[in-house]
Structures are given as C-alpha cells and as structure tokens.
Length: 469
Picture 1 (cartoon, helix red, strand yellow):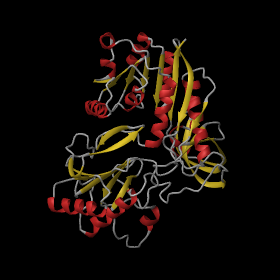
Picture 2 (cartoon, helix red, strand yellow):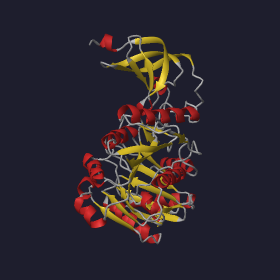
Picture 3 (cartoon, one colour):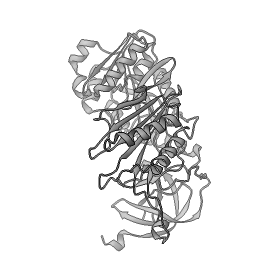
Picture 4 (spheres, one colour):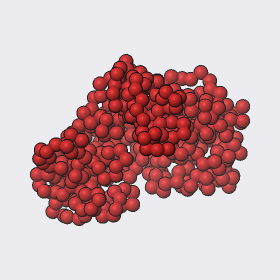
C-alpha cells in the first residue's frame, strides 16, 4: 500500500465508542474502525490517519466540529502530553460506563460466558490524589513542546523531574503538579528539583549515561507514613548527603528516607541494595486492624482505599464460614490471604517472588495470624498434585494473577482439583475471559463485580465468583 493511501484524511467523523487501552473508536467511510488517542465518544472530528491495517486505521483527531456532552475539563495542565491519565477529559460517570462495558464485552464476546445480572461497577470515592506510590525521573534535557522547539527564545534551564513521555524511553516531561498522589508529594518533588538545580547536582542523561540524580520514588500510606527513595547514578558522598539532609530537614514528616547507588544501564531497583539514610527502611499500611509492612521493593495495591473495597468484595464472594481450606494463588505479599484468614479454617498462599513470600510470612507473624502458610515457586510448577496431597484439597480457590492471566497448566490443575468455588480477581478482563472459557464446562459464573481502582485511566479490576455446575 502506498504512503499516500496509508495516510488519509476523513472529515466529520463521529466518535462512537471507547475501546481498549484508552483509545476511542470511530468508523471510516469504508466501514473500517478508526482508533483515536485524543477524542471522546460523541465528538465529531476530522481524522488524520497515520497507520492502516486490513481491518482498521490508527489516527488522530485534528479538527473538532462538535464536542461531546460526555466531556469535562481536564484538571491537570499536563493532560494530553503526560499520558498517565488518558481519560481526564471524560466525565467520571462515563469513564465508569465504558469500563463496565469493556469487562462485560470481554466476558461475553471473548469468553462466551453466560453472565448473571451484572452488578454495577464500584467507582472510587477519590477521583484524584488516590495513588500511594509514584516514581519520577530526573533528566538534564526535558521534553520540549512543539512551540518551544520552533521558538527562537532562550529556553533556559532544561532540567526535568517528572514522567517519561509515552513510547519515548529518553524523554522526560517536567511535571509542575501531578493530580495522582496526595500532598506532600508535589511539594517534595518540586523542592527537590529546585534544591538540586540551586546546588549544581547533575540531572541524569539517559543516552549518555551521565549525571548524578536518576529517579525519585514517593510512597504514602493511610497510616500517615511517607517513604522517599532517591536513586543516584554514582556515589558522591558530599552531594548525596547534601540532598538527603535537605529532604530530611525540609520534610520532617518523612518516616523512611532511603537511597540506592545504581550505575547500571537501567533504573530498576529490584536487583539493587537499598540503603536506609534516616528513619525506618519501611512504612506500614493498615486494613481492618491488620498491618502490612511495605519496603521499597514491595508490591502493594496502589490505591489503598479502593484495594480495601476490592478485598471486601473478594471475601464476600468467597462466602467463608470458618470451616474452609482456602488456596490463595499468586498471593503476592499475602494481603488477600491474611484479609480472609479470620473467616477461614486455613489459608495456603503461593507466589513466585521469594521476597514477597518473606514479607507475607513476616506480616502474618506481626498480625498474630497462625492459620496462613506461604510457599514460594513458579505457580505452574509448584501447584501440582504432590502439593495438593501435602496440603489438602481446597474448598475454595482465590486467584489474583498478573495481567497475562493464569498459566494454562494452573487452570487445568484447578479443574483437576475441582473445588466448590473459585474467586477470580483480575486486572485484565480479556485474559480473565480466556481462562473462564476453559473452565466454563465445569464452572458457572454466578457473580461478577468490576471495581475502578484507577480513575482517569482505562484500567479496571474485575472479580468473578465461579461455582461448580
């Protein structure tokens, strides 16, 4: 197909739906679907396509002839460039509608699952400032807008502390105010940036692998704890202590001040030694009196308040009476396992990450829970007949796999065991639908509940209760 044919302009096209990954959907005159990143259902737009495939186009709305009544004014000045909150221009009730629709469509169309009456999606009380963890990157060459690139003005300081531009590994947007994490997150980020510039601390250059300051992570909790971790590219004791002492003095409410020296090519910290500079090396999250210790490498649901709602739904779906043996697959740090343990006879948690299982055991001991056991290993290998023979046939299985869903061997083992109930928690209803289709001959979906963990984004969780037919 020629380049001229591949790039086309369609005029006065109505945007009719929202699709996967936050893109909206229009129909071209030739009947093909057009995926758009910058429109809202109900808009009437001109579309410039930039990619053509057999069944669809990808394009961008260039002219807006009519604005949808589903629109709302984005709260954030960085909306449209940052990429973190793709749906800020859509009113929240419509975000919930399309999330619910996506889950239902995936289960019925992809999984061919017969659904009961669908329980309405549970929205988040907080629509902004709900995240408990944010990671920001330093850069000595911030992302420039088209207007800045074309300007002949002196652009001055090029340092940035913010987010990666979507799809660009070396471009960082300098963030003035982010609407995702509660205070003092914005103050900490802005004060750290200003202090670093004033004191000549070099911001990182990803392409050249030069500079001192790489990333900053901020974690908060409902208990009031605050963790800040600064990642340095190299050791410079004088400059490192200068910055860390400033942070400690400026923000005495920080309960865990950490740093890491990471000179490798990527900035992941999971293979690095984390050093505690002041305070504790962890923070705590609390839920129904249970305390969960969270360190710099821990996974914890990033919307604490809505995680509590998700776990309550999971526990409710399980319908525990106190006599059941429960398996919690993909248990992570054992949060769900411990949350349901008081209603169960015994809970067995399985997880592939050794550090997560160590944290699960430590948290269970701290919470005086003696009816939970945790085991580490690759789920498809550990969750076998020998494991079942050793620990017993579960009455109920709770499973909360990663986005890829359950391995086919794990699904088959569940079918082999045939527990009375399975509660399936998913952050990706498409892979959930695939797994449910395999189980459909033996299990019937009797309840389903979508939960919005991430307002202003297209992400949605879904909980399904399966009972034996």
